[in-house]
Length: 231
Image 1: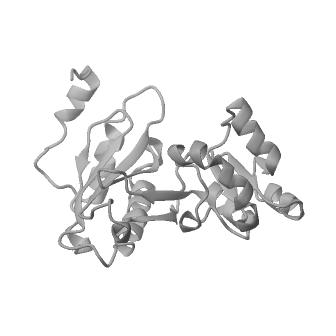
Image 2: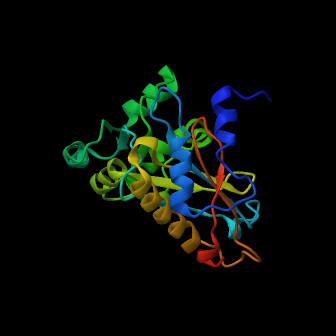
Image 3: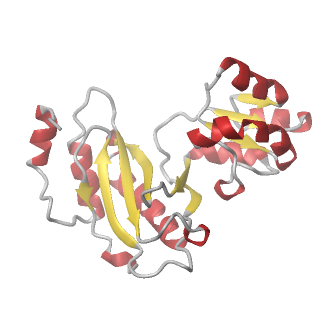
């Protein structure tokens, strides 16, 4: 694969054999974010688990102290008595079966997160085959199925992100924008890593954190030293 000049130039600033401390890694990633837009800084965490086994799944949600820099559009499914509270918390769309129909018939996806009260999951369940593959299906583990939909909306707007293993045993998560600066990105990184470490399955054997890499949307990956986590 042929890389562009900016990518090749960025490669020269990074020692591929070195494990960088967190602040160095996010600073390098930010410095190498040279696109014309404010690139997202992402973390890629390879874990020593096998996602094919149910008892080795790693999934959860965490509120990043400085958010992600992204405006989150929230669709909420709840009963009418919770409409006003959800809207007051910042929900962009609130309703019931009419939004199920809109998604199914119009292929409508003007939202980034779906939140549902437990008593609406029978309705939302019809969207499983559509929302599931997109990672948008509400789930209690990520806090998107909750009796308190207003709180769930507030948390999503405040920078709550979901982390989950993909089929290659890697977690991919945004931790902010290149413009955030070293301090905020480092704090968001630490918050995410601590949550993933805490979520280590009892069935996981051997080294848990195999590798952690930080990169900007278009940039070069920077390896992070995770020795201090002891897993």
